[in-house]
Image (cartoon, rainbow, N blue to C red; front, side, top):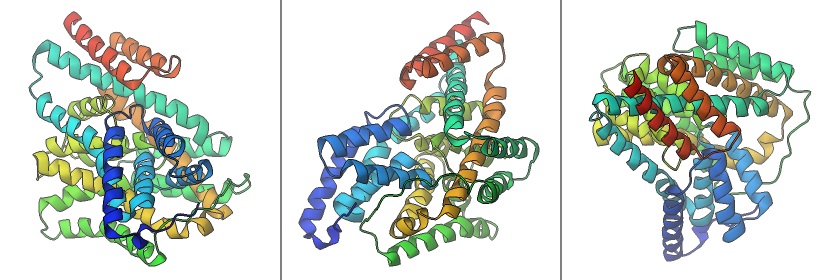
Length: 408
């Protein structure tokens, strides 16, 4: 895939292209339901089939790159398409248009959730917690078949889950992911290599190196500054940034990371966390916009709209920085068997993290009765057997939660 950098085009042409990108992605941001895999399908129809901005092979190469990296894959694909079409301004336009609709909806939910009192309101919130159980279970079921297809990777996932369940250290998740990479390097190299196509994008090696440096500085500097009297916003930004920097394997994996960052230290209650996660399934766009909801309700300053804005920047920024940083070096790196083996192990460890999160906090905080379990079972069957849209499952679970509350 060869793309001519838009830097060579007149300034007016770049601006017109950036506005075009923005309007297209706003429309996608209000219509793309179904999670990252569905988003990638929407993008293919829009930019490969309809607009022909890139061909099938180029798009497949781009998707492969974004799935390899930490961060929200569908948002990274969208940013890359905007980058190719209208330079860095186009990348920002693509991210803004795709992200803001769902973020706005979740901010509204955060402000209105506290007003949901009484049996009906509490039943609605409980139904949203139960739909989170069904959706995470579906993610575990589907991802396990792809990321853990053999005994070695299945064992990596089990060990990673045990680490998360029994080790209380805040570094347990990082350690589990690192261990998965080491085991993958040792035991997953004999597998056939993945297909590698050619990807050329308008990012120089100098810019890529600067982006990787910024990624590392932002990962390690805020915790240090927070210990030396920096404003509370540094701690909030750091919590979201670290969560976004460690997400491999899909948007649902951010759940245990955010839970560890906000629920474990008491900054957000379990009930509010899972209710917001359930609500995030009902809106289009990237699942990472769940961060905007947390930014509003978290007990760490700043709160409200400022907290939502800081949360969105914090959780999306690491994925964008590492994408820009890797783009110039991607062709030579991903063809190496060692790199592919490490990522096989990392993805298997991520599967273990998500499996542990399915038990706690998702299951233990939401399923309290046989009626709860029955509603979860219905939601899981609708998602996996009937391929029902997540929005339909959310609606059914919300009504079911209200019915269970009235019957109690």
